[in-house]
Image (cartoon, rainbow, N blue to C red; front, side):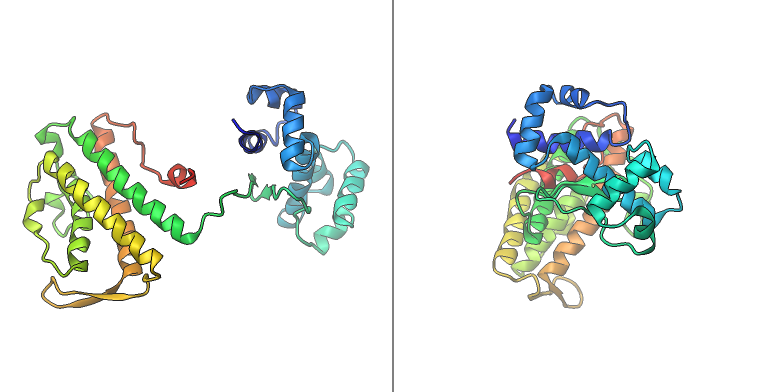
Length: 304
C-alpha cells in the first residue's frame, strides 16, 4: 500500500471514529496495521499536518458547522469537539476563525479551515478527501456504461444456475405494458436488447424484436458479447468527438423520431437501472446474492 493509499485509508478510519474520544492515535494506527510512529510520519508527509492536528481541525470545522445549523449551546458544541471548557473551546475556535463562537454563530463565514491537503469536514457527519485522478464528467459517463455492460454479463452468468421455471417466473412491477409477462428472462433479454436496439438505430438497421421472445441464456451471452462492446464503442465515439448534442433519426417505428446521443445514453442508463434492480431482487429470491444491488459506486471510484 502506497503512502497516499495509507493516508486515504486513515481519513476513512478517522471519519468512522470522529465522535469516539476513547479511540487513541495508537489504536487508529493499529486499525491500519501500522505503528503510530509510522502513521504519524505518513500522514504528516502526505497531508502536511500530524494526525492529531488533522483530527482537531476537522472537529473544529464540524463545530463551526453545528453552530450555524443547530441550536446547541456553545459549550455543548465545544464538548463535542473535544474541549473540556468553554474557555478552551473559545480560544481554539478564535485562533482558527478569527472570532469567538458566539460571534461566528451570528455572523458566519465558511466553516472550512484552510488546509493544503484539501481534507475537510463534510456535512452532516463525514469527511471529504479530494480525489487524485480528476475524474471528468465524460469519464464518469463512460465508466457507468462499462459498469452496466459488465453487470449485465454477471447477471447472465448467474442466470445459468437457475431452472427454466425460475427464469420464467412472473415478476411484479415491471416496465412492460403487460406486467403478467414480465420475467427474469425477459428482463435480461431487454437489458441486452436495449443496447442492440440502439446499435441498430445508429446504423439505420432494423432490430429483430422477435429474438427477445423466450430467449435462451446462451443466446443472451452470445448477443451481449457482440452488442455490449459495440454499444460501448458508440458511446466512446460520441464522447470523444463531442457529439452528445448531435441528433440522429430513429426510423424503426411507425413514425420517425429524432434523438440526441446524450438523450439516448440518459434513456439507457435510467431504464436499465430499474431493470437491473428487478433482476437483483429476482436473483436474491433464488439465493443468488453475491452481486448485491449492483451498485456502480465502487466501480466508478476505481482507477481506470
